[in-house]
Amino acid sequence: MKFGVVVFPGSNCDEDMRHVLGDVLGQEVDMLWHKNDKLEGFGPGDCIVLPGGFSYGDYLRSGAIAKLSPIMQQVITFANSGGYVIGICNGFQILCESGLLPGVLLANDSQKFICKNLHVKVDNADTPFTQKASADQVLKIPIAHADGRYYATAEVLKTLEDNNQVLFRYCAEDASLGDGHNPNGSLNHIAGICNAGQNVFGMMPHPERASEDILGNTQGRLLFESLIEASKKASLEGAIA
Image (cartoon, rainbow, N blue to C red):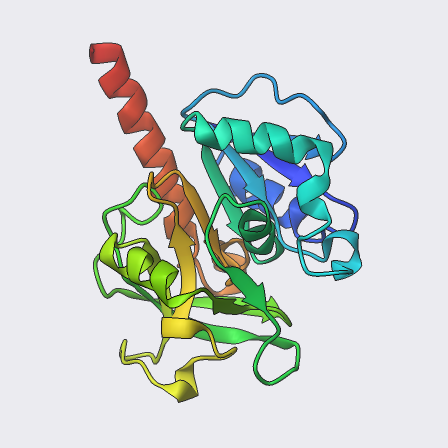
C-alpha cells in the first residue's frame, strides 16, 4: 500500500506520520507539497493523509485556507473515485472545510488548547479503518488541539448516527460516556467520523503518537494496520475477480 502525506505551511505532524507509516509499518510513503496540482502514482487502494498541525497558522478558521491549496482538488477527486483519505486533527478540520466530511470543528468549549492522553470508544468496527478493533473497544490516544469541538446540524447528526458513520467517541476508561470525559464539548461525544462510502475518515486524536513501544502505547497503530489489511484484501479480491 502506498501513502501520500500532504505537507501544508504549518503542518507539524507530517514527519511523525511518515515515520510511523514508513519506518514502523514498512509502507511506501511519499511526501506531497500542498502546491502540487497533480496527484500521480496513487491508485484506489492507496491512501492520502492530511496530517496534524496548524496549516496557514489556523487563520480565518482551522483548515479553511488549506482547503484552497492546489493539491486539495486532486485529493477531492481521488476520494470521490474511491481512494482512501485520512485526516488527523488539523487534517480532520481540512476534510470538513473541503466538504469531504460533514460538519465543522469549532473552538473547544473551554476556550483552551488541550494536550493530554484520553480514551476513545470504537463505535463502528466494521470499516476499513477499524476492522481490526472490536465494537466498544476502548483505546488510549492523545489529543492536542484548540479547535476540536465537533458540531453539525441535527439533520446531519441523525444521518451520521443512522448510517453508523461515527467511528470513535470520547469516553471514560470503562467505555461509559459523560460530560467529564468529553474534552472539548463535541456533540454526541464525536471524536472521529467517516463518509458514507467509508473511504474518507477524520479524527481529532493522534493515533500516530500512540504507535510505538518506545512511546509506551501502540494502540493507535490499530487504525493504520486496519487500513493496510483492508487494502490488501481489496487488492486480492480484485485480482481474483
